[in-house]
Length: 288
Image (tube, rainbow, N blue to C red; front, side, top):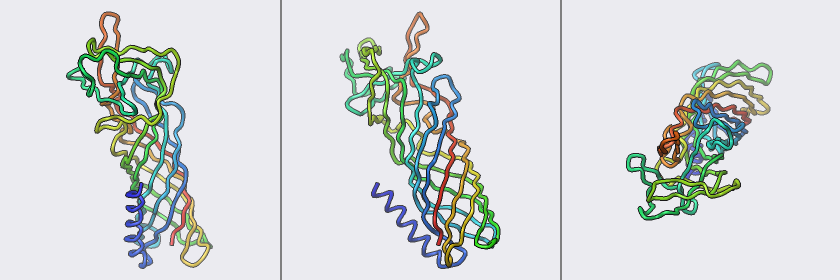
C-alpha cells in the first residue's frame, strides 16, 4: 500500500511540474465503479454485479482548446463474485482445491499431483468450491483522447475515448463451499461436509493468483467541468469500459475440475476460457 501511494505521489509531482504550462491540468479524482464479468463457458457463472472504488490523480494535456490527452494513475479496490459449483447452478460441475491455512496449493495437471502434499497423505485439507468473492487491488492507467467545448459561461462539456488498463496489485478470495479431503494415494477428492462454510482471505500459493495480471478495456466517457474559481475546475464524468482481455486466468493453476463420466473420473486444471469484464465508472474531481 505504501509503495502504491508513493507511486501516486511521484506521478503527481512530475505532472504538477508540467502543469505550470497552461496546456496542462492536474488534480485529484475519486468515485465508485460497477463491474460484471462476461462468462463464455459453462464452467462458471457470474453472481450479481461487482462494486469498487477508485481514487487517484488525473490530468489533461491539451493540443489546442478543444482536443487533448487525458491520463493519470488510479488505485482501484474492486470485488465481484463467480459461481463455480453445481449447488449454485445445475449447469456447473465439481470444482475442488487443496489448501493449508489460507494458502491454496498448486495442482500439476501433467503429473496429477498437488504441490506440497506427500504421496502417502490420505486426508489432506481440501475444499469443494461453490462461490468465490474476489477482492482485488489494481493500479490503473487510463489513456484517453479528450474532446471538449470552449467555455460556455462557466462550463465546459467533453467526451473521452481510449483505453483503461489495470495492473493487478493484490487479490484475496472469500470462498463458499463444502469441507473436503484429498487422498494423494488414490488422487481423489471427496466432499466431507454437509453444510456450506466460508473460507476467508484465501490466496493461491502460485505465480498465477486467479486474476489476470493485466486487464484492458476500451472506454467511452462523457462529462462536464465547472470553472468555479480562477483556474480551478470541478468536474464529474460517467464512463463505460468494454473489456477486451480476460479478468480471470483462462486456465487455473489451483482449481481442479473433477469430471465423472459414469465410467471414470478425471482431474484437470479448470479452464474457464475468455472472460472479459465490463466496468461502469462514475468520477468526480478537481483540476488545477
